[in-house]
Image (cartoon, rainbow over all chains, first blue to last red; front, side, top):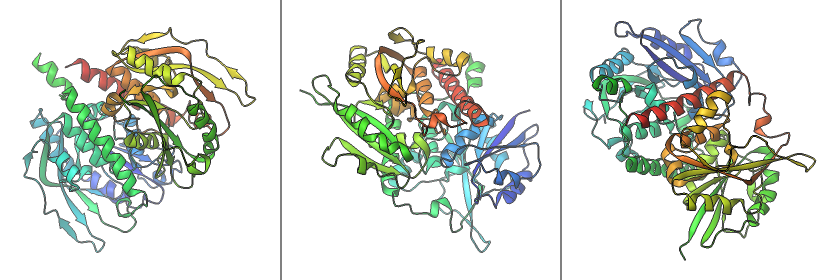
Length: 255
Length: 249
């Protein structure tokens, strides 16, 4: 039975929307034979977010020392049983059919390593606002993610990605950076495999005061510079190796 | 003479800041091969560390910065992001470099271009000032690509000490630095390096590894329990995915 693992980092106090996230997961319709697993990883060791989760054997909850979302996401990979991984932030929702669109596209296009999707903003007053700057649906223009990163105008929402667990491990999970690890991961995936843009929304992104991306840390500039350096030198190093990631089963099928 | 640089990368958190002056003294005492110099990237892991208060203001080779608390791997990766050297050397704030150790790291990688990284013998530095060696070191010389993973599969640890790593910038960049784990991120990096390149082992002591009550390896999660299992699992799957990726090319 193929499985898609949805990976959610959460910290105590940031867990109040988990019930809504679960509802958005519970109501997903998957392709025949597919099941989902929800891997929730507390960035911390209180167990409080876990106690608020519904009893569902498809949910796997873990804890660990605090170190930010990148660490929690990567730690969650230890309990992933799926061949595919899809992140979901603790305060966001999956759009209807989001998982199916990712699975169907990767199944139909084995040369593709990952999909990303349009996102819908959920405003504090409850209204939804669609994205107006999406790239064209279908294969993503190679380099569009890195170019957007360099220009400071990221073209897609990194958290809408669906990719192979093997590919995610091959790039070392989410990079050990204090922020923007989802965008950084996408830049890395693009460097080694082609991507695909789904115009159907894949995520409902909650805009609310207090969210991590709304906090302006006093060290933000220093962090951003260091992150850009780590990421861009890694891109250069990857380019020099010429490494391209291909799904292992494709290699087996063609040999 | 061409100016060549080794970047020493040090994350600092909490009580360990008080050991920085000793780490600095050990760095000052290093004599490097001709044409080589070091820079020291000290990275405060979160607020209130005040590394500058423990270090001289007038040594331009010391570069201090801070990033939000994310554990040692995030701090090391941020420090790497500020570094410019062709070699990257890990040094924890509570450890010391014995005389000549940086020169031996440099010489190993200069003399053995096929080696991507070097580690060294360690002496534990006990709280009473005495030292204790390890009697299971591998022979000095090449560590063949894949040998660390092979050893790790059986023993759940590497045959060499990841805290002594010195690696080529190109490879650290390629691997993205340290794995995003609460601990063992350096073992994660070592397993990544082992997947892509041969290594080298220096049998002379390359680090004095301080044992003290505040160190991260004393944490109950360090060597057993759910978090330990998760760290081991992530490291293993990463290393295997990397080996499989490279070998199917």
